[in-house]
Length: 134
Length: 386
Image (cartoon, rainbow over the protein chains, first blue to last red):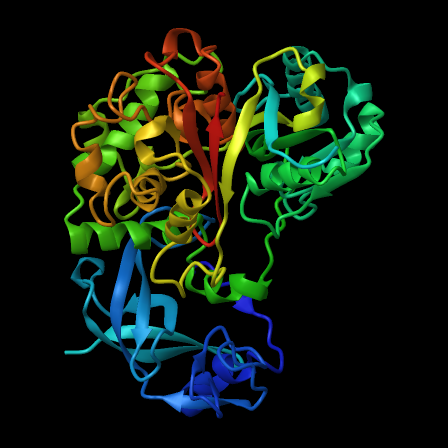
């Protein structure tokens, strides 16, 4: 039995991000006035201070900006090794997601790899994990 | 009269160890007493207290003692105090104290950082670590992916240096090797045994490219720095060390949304606030909770260019005690213990005063730089002996 993942506490601002996977969509908050993607999601645009912000689906692909292979069992039952990566999200300049790269050997991952979102469901929460493309 | 510069006067440190049983308030008292003795001050002359991050109720080992508790426990009459985590990292508590004495709110401020993380592990009933199944705030963007430790977050910045700039493990190793070599000459260091490159290279990985020896370890102890006003120096028995410049720049306050860790803008900002230049720096005491942070700080402070930190420390000669830029001469956090930022300022002061004993650096000692944090939060202090 793998270690349970700590799960986010849902609220009105983060709900679209964490539940978008139910519809297979990676949802990022975006300012409807200046177009800036806002992550972490907030009810105001950090560029123009507009409150006219709303979640918007992005393609769900990206590029590995950096990564690390974690070998340390930080808590009991944590299965190691696994890949933690920072993924630059296509179509959302400046937005990075910390995530796991799954579905491939840990030594397969490199900076610059193209990846695609795959959701891992935990009741109503869908964690955006990523897998290598091609 | 307020105004002028702020000075670090007395400094003190308790016993430092792993799994201490002495109460953390008493460890703090030990450090306070040592600092008061050096400064020639009595507690009655202390009118301010500053700490980071304040009492951490959900994780007492991280910070078991708050400023308010210290005030009450030691019978201090404070006209100003501060303690909190929403500040530019650990040495931000010193920045706050400096502003307090410069504005006349206090004359002599005890700045302290007490850590009890190793003891807490052995006594979880008294010092529990709250572990929740549900996370909010910034933790929600990391913990669900088992990116649970600052080692993981820092490792990703280090990995960019490996892949983009060609930083090697042999280069990264120099931080730990240098720390451990210096720690041997620090009677209070928690590890006093040479680390060889072979041992480093064969160590188990924690979070690539960081291995076991790239990480500090839980430590118990307390460090105190007394910050005094310019017009209160006639009460001081030791050589005052002037805080010549302070910097702490934060933009995203995030471990994953910034292209560069906040040490970079902070390091650049420091030099905008002083007439001193990098060549004036006799020693650098740079935060190294993870070895890579010291490399990043070297770049951030402009001792080399971004991406060149690995090459800068290659072979270790340049950063050795008798090198051109002696680094972390007390052993840093990897050798001396995870005193969480305050150890760097303590050692900078001790070196500038020429009181470092066997590990004392040679030559003229007028200016030192010390830092804390570096990830989403960073503080840099430039200290000068006039």
